Length: 121
Length: 107
Image (cartoon, rainbow over all chains, first blue to last red; front, side):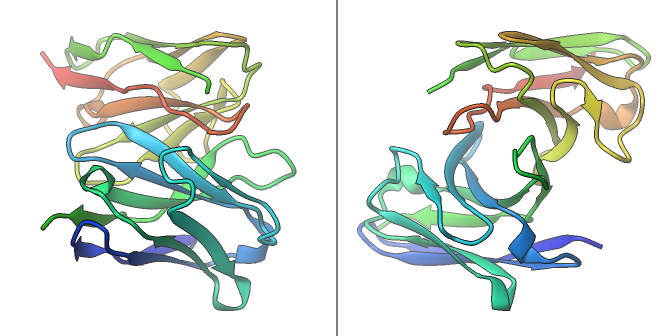
C-alpha cells in the first residue's frame, strides 16, 4: 500500500528553524513529484512548495520563498521541507502530498498525515 | 495567481439530498481541476481529477463537471460519511491554488 509518513515539526520560537520529513513507502519515490501544503488552524489549504521527481525543479509560493527549502533523497524515499526565519503566520499543519503519475500532474493522489508546526514565544 | 472561488461556503443538507458545489476560476484552467474531501483532523482525500474523472475507490455518487472557468461537484444522494469540507484545486498554473472550502453540514 502507498503510504506517506511525516515527521518533524513541533514548537519553535519566532525566528527559529525546523525541518519536516515525508517518507514514502509502497512505491518508487523517484517516479513522482512532491508538494507541501499547509493549513492554519481553522483555515483552508495553502499551497507552498513543489519538487520534481529528480529534484532538478523546485517551486515556492511567495509567502515562503527565501525562507523554506524543499529537497529530496530518493535513496531514502524521503522528501524534506527545511523551514527558517519562522513567524507566527507559519503556524499550521503541514502536509506532504504526492503528485499524480505522468508528465502532467493532475492531482495530489496521496497525502501524509500532517504535522503541526507551532511558532510561538 | 489563479483565484478559485467556491460557492456556497456553507451548506446544510439532509441524508439522501442531492447537493452541488461550484468552483469558479479567475482564468481559464482548461480541465486541470481536482476536488478533495477533508474530515476534521484528517488529511484531504482526492475525489475527482481532471474535472470529471473519479478517483479509484471513490463512490459513484460523487461526480464532477466543467471546464475553463466553471466547475461543479455533485453528490447525488448524501450519506452520513459525506458531511465534511470540500476543496477544489487548480493544477494548471503554479501555485496550485485551492478554493476556500465548502463545509457541508447535517440539517
